[in-house]
Length: 119
Ligand SMILES: [Zn+2]
Image 1: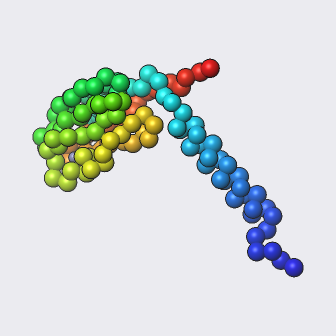
Image 2 (image 1 turned 120 degrees about the vertical axis):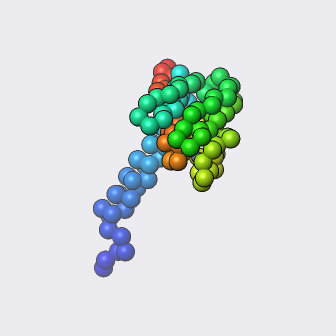
């Protein structure tokens, strides 16, 4: 009699689930000393720490954009680009590690450095 799933397959599936769960936990660990960098072309034009509320204007290839930092998160506003995908990406934070990209302006906003709290 053949069962629908072989024992080996069940083990593989269980392992995959466990690995995913561990990976999510690792990614979700609180991060410290987070640095976010804003890259225009190949050049880092600004770095900021998300725990300092601020508004940065970044020059880009089609007018640039503003990056608003508030409460540990950041997002794009006042974007001068035709598709507004960067603004629609919404808020990014150290937890979700979302990379905000504005293709028309050739600007990328991403977490560049962080440390985990060690206890
Ligand atoms: Zn854009």
